[in-house]
Image 1 (cartoon, one colour):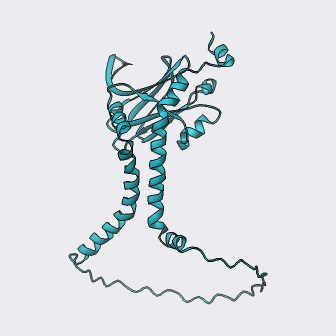
Image 2 (cartoon, rainbow, N blue to C red):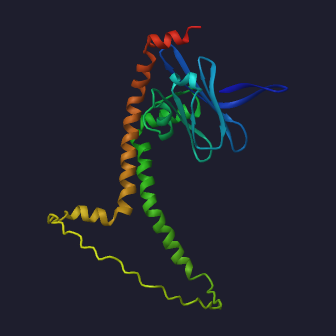
Length: 253
């Protein structure tokens, strides 16, 4: 989408990724567009009115409205390490800002049809298991990666010239510290139950540094599949929602 923005001396056009989410009669719109070579400008609008904006190079950006617009919720926008937009998530309720900061909960906004993010989401919807598996692969790489790096270093160690450095020896002072009479405390003996952990648990604890990243990857993958399966239903539920009487009175000029 081409986003038109007013600038001094004329009007500039920029390519930007757009997401929208309808909540009752309100339409939330988020635009992520290039501001500089390393930064992006994130704009959040509701019914065409500016709510919040931020220019940053951060991968995860949180937008919150002014105090009088707290009922509008909060927005979390996610980019890749290469500054490409990926997701925009809307949060509502009293703890919207805190949830946006942690990334827990929220509803994914709908990317504009035909945009790169929309095309990617369509592919992911057709093959959710394949795309979710990348989280498991990431966990495996956290385990295998250091092993491979260590192996490469060991292999290349023979190619590095040995360095024989004659460094001077520094005479450190010999200091006699006094002995302090610490109190002798007899702690009571607690009769702990005699319990032998099962073999599989002993193995997991002994290999936690390898097992934990993979288990986290599996949990994230399952959560990703479940989130994508319910996103469309949650959007439709928000679309058909009626604002409560308090919100209607607030919106009335």
